[in-house]
Image 1 (tube, rainbow, N blue to C red):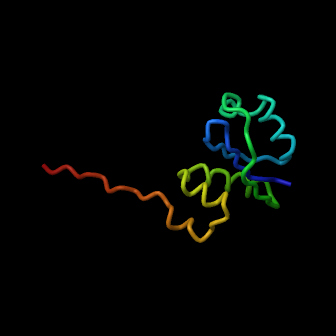
Image 2: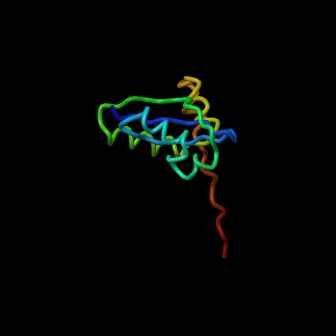
Length: 99
């Protein structure tokens, strides 16, 4: 089954990925055969996973979560789903140039 997952790395950072074989992919990350990002930050710990019916759904969720800030990812990991909308990154207004 396809999964989206979040790993907490040894340096406290998070890695977001997706896979069709979660146990195999976790073993790859732990052994240093996973992503270059986690290779330099081992050991890693699985802190979140979600199962999907289709690969494209897992991939889309991965891309969405990758765009989130740390506080929003932590809320997801902790299951604080009601907090997620309030933790959306706000876009600051761009300054205008007068002329």
